Image (cartoon, rainbow, N blue to C red):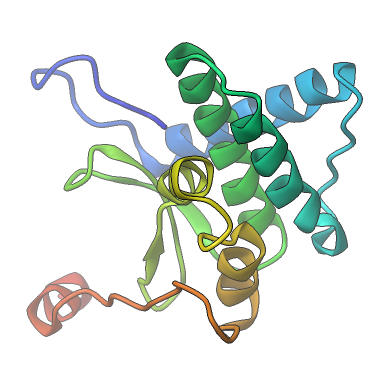
Amino acid sequence: MVRRKSQQEPPPSDAETAEHMRNLAELFVEHTRENGYSFDWDPAFIHHLDNYCTEFAASKPSPEAIHSVITGAGACLGEMIVRNSDWTWVYCTDENAAAVESPEQLRGYPHNKVAKRIHNGAEHDLEAFFKYAVTGETQRRTTARVSKPSWWQRLRSRA
């Protein structure tokens, strides 16, 4: 999650956000590998991220560890979406956070999804979130939902 230090600083550019998220994702993959996990950018292995979050939550981690994993795993989830689709990293000033965005301007917040997965359990399926971004199809019994920008925001972005 890219967060501004103060209201005086300008928000990071989308390119800066993408670079920061890519670096966080790669660090997450590297550090979890040291603990015996093997993450990859191959979509066939997205379920490993769900399994990791389940095991992590069951370990009753400290708030600091939770924040660290949300940051790293969220970047990893977002980077998997970016690497396997036409979505891109953007900085959302409304949310003051990194997001992934489709060419149709749909936004997803991978860090929020990972946080919900860790705090609320399997109903917040990371694999379903990923598959929706890549294919546009929602799976049965998922919490995935589409929230498009309002019509006036879409018109304004075309001007």
